Length: 200
Image (cartoon, rainbow, N blue to C red; front, top):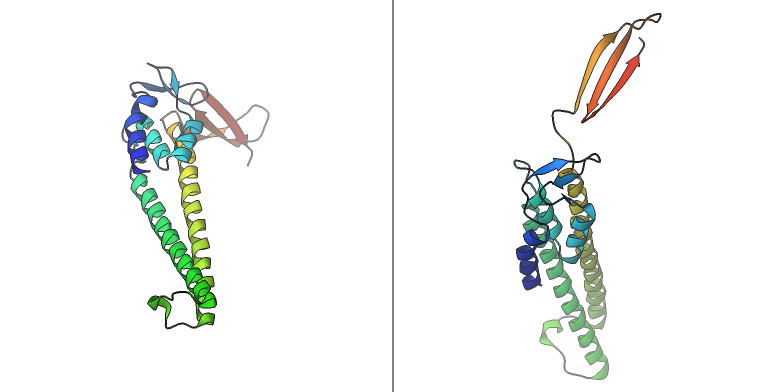
C-alpha cells in the first residue's frame, strides 16, 4: 500500500501536467492555457478513491499561488486511516483468540494462559465486546475514507472558485422617473452585472 501511494505521488504531477498559466473560462473553471487543461472535480474524486489523499495532492498542484492549503491534510488522512486500521486489526485478532479459546474449552483443547482468569461466560462477554469494537473500527475506517473523498471533491470546487476583485456589491440611492425613492444594489460576477432595486 505504501509503495502504491509513493508511486502515485511521483506520477501525479506528470498525469495532471505542470501548472503554468491558469485562467478562467466562461464557466469559471480553472484552465491551463498552455495545455488547455480544465481542473476536474471528477478526477480529484477518482484519485482519492484509488489512493486516499491523492485527490488533495491533485488539488494542491492546481491551486493558485498563496492559496495552496491541501497538502497538510494528507498526513491527517493517513493518521486517521492508520489509527482506525490499527484498532480494526487488534480487535479482530482478539476476537479470533477469544473464539479459539471458547472452542478449545468446549472441545477439551489447549487453553491459553492469557484468558485463564475468565470463565466461559466471561469469554463470551469479552468476545461480544471486542466484536462490537471491531465493527466500530470498520465504521471508523469507512468514515475516514469517505471524509477524505468528500473533502477532495469539495476542495476541487474551490480551486475553480473566483475570489477576484470582479466580485463586488455596491448600494446606492435610486430615483426612477415617476416612482418613489428607492435603494439600488449592483453585484458584479466576473463579466456579468446584476442590478436590483428596492423601494423603502
